[in-house]
Length: 257
Image (tube, rainbow, N blue to C red; front, side, top):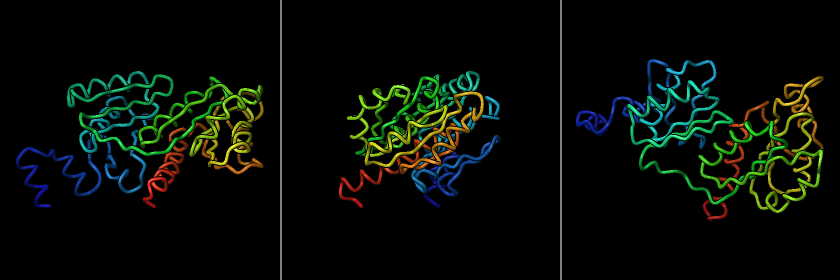
């Protein structure tokens, strides 16, 4: 503790960063940021932009960069993404900011951020273009957790040949996220082809009876092949779960189990 206080007194550590080291989280006017989550759980904390003002999102993103060297913001509107850019340009002008437009996922890295590196691969597969936003969210978080990510898009079961054409990529993955809307059949099909764990990601595409992802979720839960299932549109959770599996695989590959 004395070392932390001395670094604050010397100007080498901000109060927020000091609080994060001592308590594991940083307190802002707009909420608390769990700076120790990645060390504790293996999954980085992310700022969910839904139901927050752009200013609140920007404040929490700045706290994330200040305390961990990285900010992950999910479901950001254009206004929230702009607010994050402007706040980081003012507070952390050397931070690198990337906005993934389809999913609204914003990633910021401070200079010198030490990204994790996992010697394992996650394949993120989507049934159709309408599933791409949830799939992108899964791919970004898996990549931020250190996994190599291969993406396979638009291989819905309406033309099963498209899935079979991607067989080599599917077989090479150490874990897979498979996103599908409508009746949600694609994860069941893929899980019947590969030996690696599959995380089914139901997507709120489709209409009529069982629309908004309900049929996709029910279909995956009733799968006759072995797979895990997350909530509708829960791309972050699916990608993080697959990356945790990949991390274990990578550790075993390196002999660090």
